[in-house]
Length: 213
Image 1 (tube, rainbow, N blue to C red):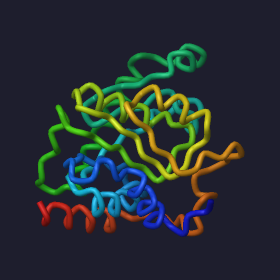
Image 2 (image 1 turned 60 degrees about the vertical axis):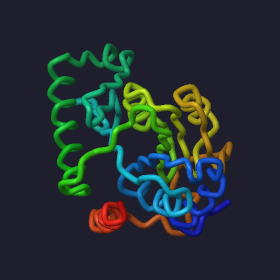
Image 3 (image 1 turned 135 degrees about the vertical axis):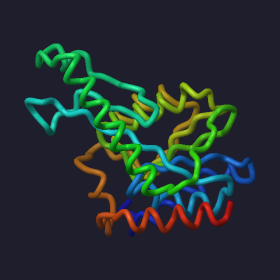
């Protein structure tokens, strides 16, 4: 299936998540594209829409290679095998993690303004993105959420490869995915329109959320 755009994918995903309607779920969307998917999910389910960001930590020798990921609360997920293979120092990881955490905080402040982050404890938490590929950064986000002891942790995405979904299913209580093709190269190949989402669109949606709360 090819989704027309992120919004259509979100509308279809919302139908799959109907069991959470009127249960006041906390929907944590991954900026930027995941926020577009999550808006119709929030419209349909109710509850609260907010944000979650995890940031890749790149190898100093191969910037395209992820050796870890960091989240807003400082949680670190590391690929210890790659770190050992490349001889990467703890000092580099510490610096890169702190830099990533500060960038996450900058973006959250940009999107949220002065609004406070939600409390995750004892909430039904739905993490929503526009798709997963390797799943490394979303895995860090899920583990960060789990540390806050939600009542239920759910991952909902329109598309992802079977092998990634199998790994992520171990991190959550429920996983919902509309399409899981065996032949998978990139999330964008499953969208007719996969245009880049800019910060102003995320800010617009978050303003709408906070004006409704």
